[in-house]
Image 1 (cartoon, rainbow, N blue to C red):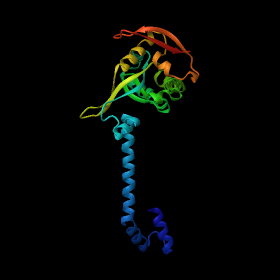
Image 2 (cartoon, rainbow, N blue to C red; image 1 turned 90 degrees about the horizontal axis):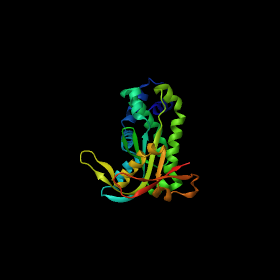
Image 3 (cartoon, one colour; image 1 turned 90 degrees about the vertical axis):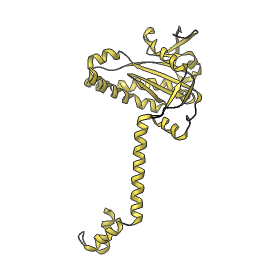
Image 4 (tube, helix red, strand yellow; image 1 turned 180 degrees about the vertical axis):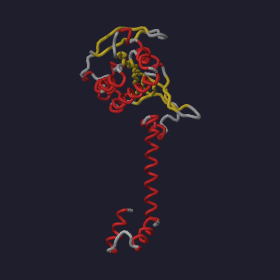
Length: 258
């Protein structure tokens, strides 16, 4: 509009208050072509904002899968899971109080999110102070994304250590368990639809993460995932133990990274 106004002033060799300028400006802004462009811009911006808002709430990959209908019917697929749990969260919450702890938790999640996105993971769930991250098998194994994600998250918190110490008086740390296996995935729900993963692999990953304290490790990885990871990754995997997990008859060999 401002460009059109200037062009009319130049065309009529007059000033802003000339009657001919305002008549032509009125005709310009009420022209169907101009209104169509404005409607197109408003619609595009509105759709983009809606997409970003929904994507922020359920995740970009999950939203894409909703649109493509990938999980309209249950399917089986092999996935990698990381259960990442904040260490000493109970004592931190007691020290900070509920409101301050919530503020720290929100910042903690935000600071870890970029590492997950950069390494092709999706946030499957937030469970209190625990984050469940998942990869399709190919994306998780490619460039050892799942393992690099863990160390990128560590680095992200270290880089923000001054902020946490100044604002909250504590620097949160975490431990994580990794496992992979077949799951069933599909949409579920009526009022609110979500994509749900079900399978023994999730329970096993949660129990592996729970053993981090038992073995004094910040990262534990199942033997089946270690076998799938590339040998040229630059990581050295060390056997920790063959553990019996609750509810499972067979033992599972656990590794850490040294």
